[in-house]
Length: 184
Image: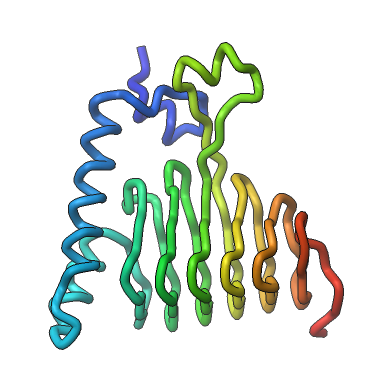
């Protein structure tokens, strides 16, 4: 029989209250707490704490506070910047390209719950991966929902909710976010 963590990592419905997953989230919360309270003058120490939690492929800067569910499902490309209040629910992979800039209070959520009230009441969750291409800018208070892919050179306007994939070279706004301008 598969463990709940194996189910989650395979993208199958799982129980988030599983003791192993709960322990993984607790570890990530403690790491975020350390990062968020770390001395702002100790840049090397702060970067080292972040690199234990998240995989980075180059230089990065994340303003505190940062919140993640697990950390181990997040991969971030070179030249990454996130402003205050980034939340990443990473039950599924979150792949972020290079030259990505994130404004304050952005939510990247791979996790969701069933529409069926009986299944939802049991604590069942599902996850779908999120991919963010290169040269993307997410405005303040943007929410990325489970399973979306943002192409390269995409700008998502402040307050937008992304529920569908967004094409390369586009400015996208609204709820749900949709392309309103081409950057090609």
